[in-house]
Length: 299
Image 1 (cartoon, rainbow, N blue to C red):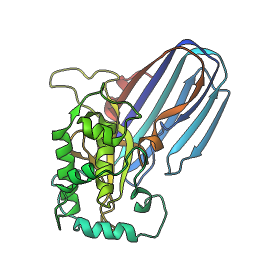
Image 2 (tube, one colour):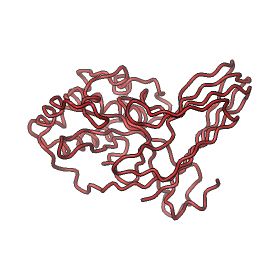
Image 3 (cartoon, rainbow, N blue to C red):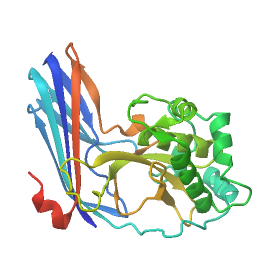
Image 4 (tube, rainbow, N blue to C red):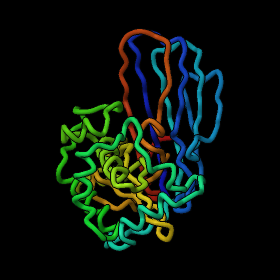
C-alpha cells in the first residue's frame, strides 16, 4: 500500500521566541517492509541552518536552528511511503518464548537489527516486579512467543483505559501501569517493560496509524494520528514482529514506521529547546492517505 503522509505541527507562543533548536524525526525510516518514495520538510520561519544525520538506531534526523524572532512556528513534513507488510490473520506460532530469550542473549552482533540493543531497561521502561508478573500471565511455560505476545497485547487493550489527559510524554511505564490509564506511548512502554522483565528484546516504535471514518461519515482532514507500538524480536528465523497494544493488533499495512528506539525519548518526533518566555500552544494535524485518495489533500 502506497501512502501520502502529511504531518503539520504548529507552535503558538505567548511571547516572541528569539532562538529555537529543533531535532526532527519526521521522515519515515526505510526498512525491508517499507520503502520511502519521497520526503520533504517545510519549516516557517525559514531556519538559519539545517543539518541532517542518521540517528543511533538508523532513523533520519533533521536539526533546524531558527534565529528569527517568531510567535508562530510551523513544521510540515510530507512523504510518500510504500508499505508491504503481510497481515497475520492468526498470530500464532514461533519457538517457545524461553528459547527465544536464550537466543536473544546469545546474539553477539550489534547491527541495527540486533536484539542486543533492546534487552535492557531504560529510565522510561524500567523493569518492575508488578509489570513482569502481569506479562508473565501470558508467557506460560513453553508457550509459542508470537501467541504469548499477542495475548499480552490483547490484555493491555482490555485492562487499560485510553485517556489522553492522564499522562504526558514524560510519564514512566510504572506510573501508567499503576494508574491503568494512558495513551499509545504508555501502553507500548508498559508492554516493553513487561517483555524485557521476562528477558525478551522489545523496541519502541514511533509512527503513524491509518484510521477509518465511521460508515457513512466523511474522512476528516487531519484526523489521523501519530502512534506508538512495540516490536518484539521473535528469534533468528522470524525476526521482528510489531504488536499494537492500544488496538490489540499485530502490526500490518496500516502502520507506517518513523523511528525505532528503546523508549519514547529515543525517537520523539519533535524535540529541542527554545529561548523565550510565556505559555505555548501546540496543534497537530496528521493525514495518512492511500495514494488513490492523495489528490484530495491540500499541498
